[in-house]
Amino acid sequence: MTTIILEVDNRTVTTHFILLGFPTRPAFQLLLFSIFLVTYLLTLLENLLIILAIHSDGQLHKPMYFFLSQLSFLEMWYVTVISPKMLADFLSHDKSISFNGCMTQLYFFVTFVCTEYILLAVMALDRYVAICNPLRYPVIMTNQLCSTLAGGCWFCGLMTAMIKMVFIAQLHYCGTPQINHYFCDISPLLNVSCEDSSQAELVDFFLALMVIAIPLCVVVTSYAAILATILRIPSAQGRQKAFSTCASHLTVVILFYSTTLFTYARPKLMYAYNSNKVVSVLYTVIVPLLNPIIYCLRNCDVKAALRKTIHCRGSGPQGNGVFRS
Image 1 (cartoon, helix red, strand yellow):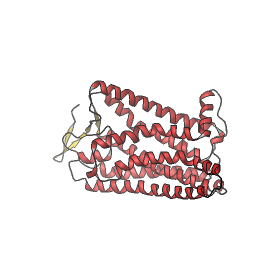
Image 2 (cartoon, one colour):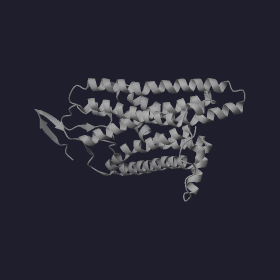
Image 3 (tube, rainbow, N blue to C red):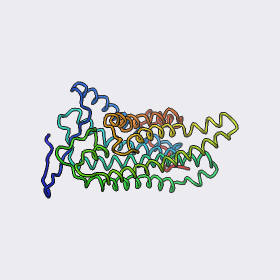
Image 4 (cartoon, rainbow, N blue to C red):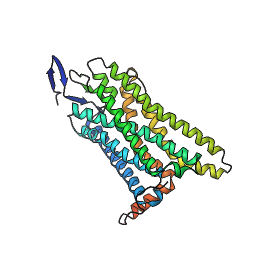
């Protein structure tokens, strides 16, 4: 499809972009479509099962699993923002996306990424309280506080995305903007702008550092205190049990932070398209697929709840639907 251009005040205004995606032979496009479709459907199924298991099992109505259900809900939308358009482009010669569609995809993608950064930090804080202050844990991590923290994660994500969009959406894009990516991301858009985007780039870089650095400091500080506490436990069995409660979360944090940090915590001039496409596949496709598996492999309670959810689909939900401290 030819990109539509309008003339406004002697300047061209682009109404569509072209997503270059993964330029390969048609046969390989079909193979990629099949792989990414299966991955997308499995990701949705895994996260949905975790949400259902946590909701239906009264033993999992606790803050840690409440935040895990929030993470699963978040990642279902996170992959849905990217995957359907990417899958459609594998089967179509028309890889265009409207300006409004591109900005909408970017807005929600940034919202979910920023929300996940903060949510992972909140989950680390929850583990810190549980291990370092176990007697006060029920008093501190109340239902109200957990709901407030979860709401705060979403609010911060929405506001961060809104600020970024104010600067990016007002840029002018001329000619036939071809985005060398498989979705509308910030750096590729900045690179196809036909005006000085240094202000938008600076705002994006500053907010990226804030959204990454502050939660990362919370995670590092929490786990430093957790490690110090675990090392003071006299029995090896006690140390192993304490560490096992946060091993899954720590693995997820390392996977998500390492891949996204490579992409977003650096200026546009350091942006390399080919390497970023590969890394982007990791955190938009692979990591959301692996996260539920990681939590299930390392957590016996989740595995048991999942077995009950799968084998007892006809039975009614257990518990009163309110998580316990």
